[in-house]
Image (cartoon, rainbow, N blue to C red; front, side, top):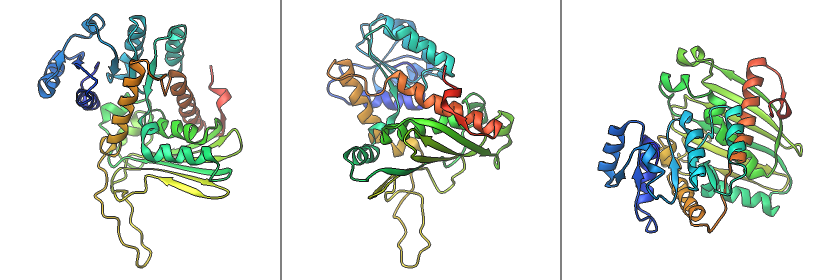
Length: 328
């Protein structure tokens, strides 16, 4: 495990609980933080350099984004299967450089888009693939954070589309089985000044046109005080389904006689997607063991990044942007 922040520590705890995993070794650019995580979890610790000579079977990367390219390449060069939380790199040129560098290798790389492993999103994808919804006409995706991240995080996040919306862009592709051809995006700042100071927005909306004419909308905000709200409506000519409309969705109907949802609302992404993270890491064990190919390769992350980049250009220039404009 390279990186022992919040999600890295959670992943290490999950991996430790798998019977198939004999040992977990954690490392961090901050040795004290790695030592504290190791002591808390009862696992081993090592320096980042020593990880690649420690005889490990797989590497999980949850370090800061700027460390992702070097760690992915080092693992592939050492013949070690690697799981890396998104993104592959901080920008499109960096992502392309990694893909080009590892392209000739057969060492598997899995990128962390955990929504692909959520039961609801998987069921929606199956419903589309089976034809039971008919032909799709609309997808409506939302990611509403309950509170904004710290100012220092926002300044280096890459922006709302690249940092947050990229998950929605990935599942729109994955659930629909289609590619995005054009986007039109807008954004607003009604909260803390540090978003505008970083050239970012705290709320955004994007319309995506898919390659078969299906329309998708993606709504994002950092200020959903009711709780963490992530949903996807998948609507077809015959039927429709919704992901994320459960007892903990932070919604309240004002229709007469409709009881409130029991709650409580999810406080954040870790709680909402805990089962998905577990399933995702189990899938990585199959990749490491050679039982399955990577279910989410670096090229998938690149496609989602292209959509995010097109949305950012569209927001800044206030015009529709075709994906062909940002492809390299």
